[in-house]
Each structure stands twice: as C-alpha cells, then as structure tokens.
Image 1 (tube, rainbow, N blue to C red):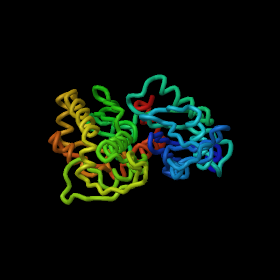
Image 2 (image 1 turned 90 degrees about the vertical axis):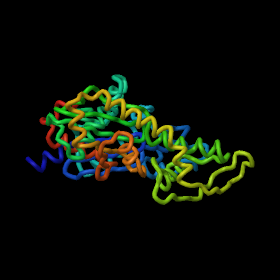
Image 3 (image 1 turned 90 degrees about the horizontal axis):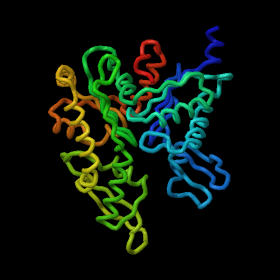
Image 4 (image 1 turned 60 degrees about the horizontal axis):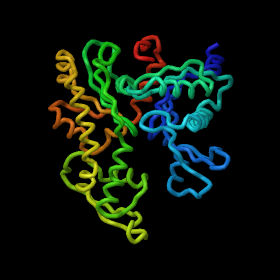
Length: 339
C-alpha cells in the first residue's frame, strides 16, 4: 500500500516568486529552481520555453516570439501563462508517477488580496491539485529556517524577494500586529540601476545586465574595498553599442532609494511591535531570507539602522520552498498558519 500510495499521491510545495519559482516534492526535496519567465510564440500563444531556457532569450527574441514574466510584484499578472508555466514544471516533477492529484502548499505575499488569492488557488486547482493551501512567505520562510513558530517568543523575519519585501513578527503560529508587505524587491533594485545608467551615462542596458551588475558590485553600505566593473549597453545619443567603467559607489547611490524604503518599512514594523515581543527580538535579532538578503552589506545596513543583530539565513533563496515542504510533512501541526 505504501508503494501504491506514493504512485497515487505526491505532496508539492511551491514558492511562486516574481523572479524564481521553486518546487519542493515529497521525498525528493527541491527539484525545480528556475526563473519565472516564459517564452511565447506571438501568433499561436504557444509556450516555447520556460525557466532558464526562456531567460536566455530575454532581450534577444525575434518579432514573432516574446518573453514574459507572468508574475508581477509577487502576484499573478497573467493567469493563463502562469498556469502554462506551472504545468510544464509539474510535468517534470511527476513524470514517474501516474493518477497524481497532489496536495499543494503555495507561498504568497502577506499583502495579497482576496482576488489574488483566488487566482493563485485556481491556477493550482487547474493543474489537478487535490487540495490547495496558501501560506504567507514570511511564515513559510520562518519555518524553512527552523524557527519554532508555535512558541510564545516572538521572531522577526524579513523576506526580500523579486517583487515584494515581507516583514513579519511571528509568535504562537500567527503574525503579531499584521505583516508589513511592500512591493519593492529585487526587480525594483534592477530597475533603479537601469534608470541611473540612463540618466547619468545615457546608456541603456537590459534587465539581465542590471541584475548582473547588482550581483557583481551592488551593495547597501560602503565596502572595505570598493570594486569596479565594465558595462556594455547602447548609447542613447549615438545609438551605437558602448562600454563604460562603473564602480560600486555609484551603484550604491543608484540603489539608495529602494533600500531606504525597505529600511523605513522595517522601522515602522518595529514601532508597531508590542513591548514584550520587542524584547524577544532584541534577544533573538532579525532573520533575513529571500534573494535580496544576498545583497552585499544589507544585513550591516539594517543592523546600523535598528541597533539589532541581523542574521542572513543559510541558503536564503530556498527558505520559503523548504518551509512549504516542512508544512506538508506535518500539515496537521501547521493548520493555523495556512489560509
């Protein structure tokens, strides 16, 4: 019965992120970690590629093909394309199983609206899910890093993703005083770099180039040794390709406004925190998860602004997906955190 049970069921956890989609499968762990990008044929709307294969096409497609990101600011922007993307990835996941109707847990932004919840739920149901549960990303991230969300002591977790930054104080299987969700994340940082180069150098670069600049020399506070890199783009005046040399100081200037907005949201969340829970945070510090946690010096910047210890989770990109997996492994214990 155990063998046939595995063939007939397959619990799946999904971190449906703006920048990346991660899928956890019962008994296998994280089996999909790819960009949330889809390449589509314009005339037929046929899906040509998804994930990394589609990302390689960004900015290079001919007129009859477009690349789209079906999720924007943490929620579904294109219902049909999201469904197609999920179907392709899940076919890979369940290729060795049959008659599968999985239970699915999906990590979503804490500020998601009822309409957006319904869109996520319908997408999962239309890929033949047996049951669909939603969990807020900061809650899933906290569970993923090993925080005991059931205990009375409070923990602050900040999940900085591609489309949103989620700030939550968690205690007794709930979020104290409501989570703070702002639609600023890695994508806004990339766009800030694009706009800075356009304004100061008359140089136009694509989103992939901006993302790579952020990874290579981006920072939230001064570095011990500032670094430089060469950037290739199109000169907006001469309309020809051009290469410039730029340093981490200038990129830090470009990122200043979105980072300041994230810091402000953290301070507002701390202001709303009850005194007893604030004392717990003083003892435990703040936990950072999500891809944005990898930005150089962000933890130090938050530490300087809040006077609290700040910890970056181990493998912050996978925390939410690992959290959905832990929930599915013991779903009866985590019923209170699901909606």
